[in-house]
Image: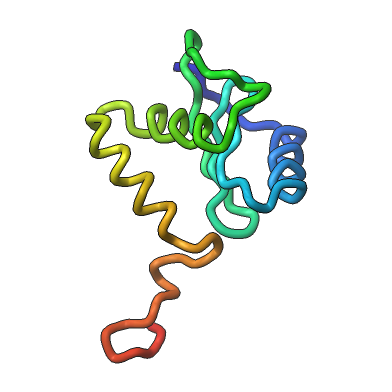
Length: 107
């Protein structure tokens, strides 16, 4: 699996990609699968050297599947699908820490 540092140009490119496509939460680009988590938070996982993903024209569903497959390769497909479904249910920009506690107030 490829890894390494992410350049400033890559960071700015990811930011611009998601600014231009606010409905997107996943992106594939050369060497990386990127997941937007909130504003300005990008989770990256390296794509394997030999992969089947189209990094130029990947749909949201393709990029989402690739991110989960590469981020959690040790999990069975059903477990990855359940994690992806749970992540889709969370609103972008809202973390678990920001959710109300059992008394209805924020922590």
